[in-house]
Amino acid sequence: MTFGLDVLAELTRLSGVVVLATAVARGLLDGGPRNPFAFILPGTALLAVGCVLVLVATIAPIASRLEEPVLALALEYFQTTSHGPQLLTPILPAIYALLLAEGLRIADAPGFRRGLYWMLAATVVAMLALMAASGHVAVTEWDHIGMFLQIVHMAAAVAWVAIVLALLPRLWSGQPVAGELTRIGNVALALVIILIVTGIASAWLHGATLPWPLAEDYGRLLLLKTAALLLALAAAGWNRFIELPAAGVHETRVRSVLGFEAVVLLLALLLAAWLTRTPPP
Image (cartoon, rainbow, N blue to C red; front, side, top):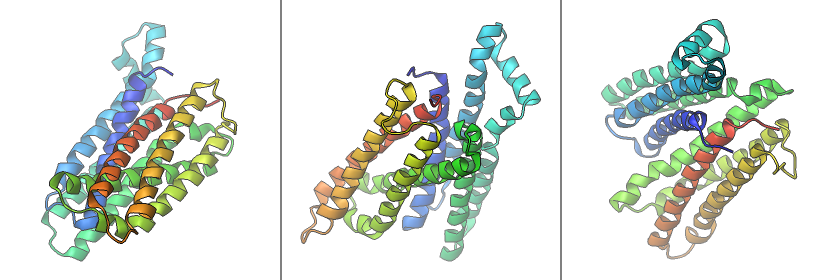
């Protein structure tokens, strides 16, 4: 269960998608910033760097055994295999995201801007689909079903993290968040249900049936990731069912629980990247 370049590469790539999704969440929640490049440009850069690092990390063990230069072998792998280009294809929708950001910069009509944000959301899902296409699920027995489940699982997870991160500026600026949490509570609950169902199904397709094989690194990481998600779910549930329905909403407690949820979700993001780069049983 070693944390290596491959995990760092996947984390960088996944972080880029989360930053882009946060831009979408901010836009759909409150209109977003006038110039969304502050989110979309760093997200695209992180994704691009992560994709290149994933390619290098994939080749690094082979280059070490062959005693060949990593970059030269990575370039050869990219040119002579179908998997090499697959690792870089998420960059293409990220470039399209930059074009959408330019449209958002000059658009004034609220309805048109909202439509552009939905197009950006579809672009983020396309990135996740391309990332899933080069992962472990592509070689499972039920590859098409597994691919669909993995894309839906990743989209639900990224959307949950993005919604929470989109609310953090309100925490930092001292604005109330209870009203916004009440407005999006049902959406967040639906995302959590989708995340749990698709996660269990995806784990089963990978051979990680209950009880999870804790003798394997994949099983231990899966357990840690599940524990982190359950913690985040507990925090979200506390706000949703305990704090927000109360007669007098205690804004300070709501903000504290939301901050805790954000920290745990970022930890789950790290574990998800680690799990992605760990061979299943």
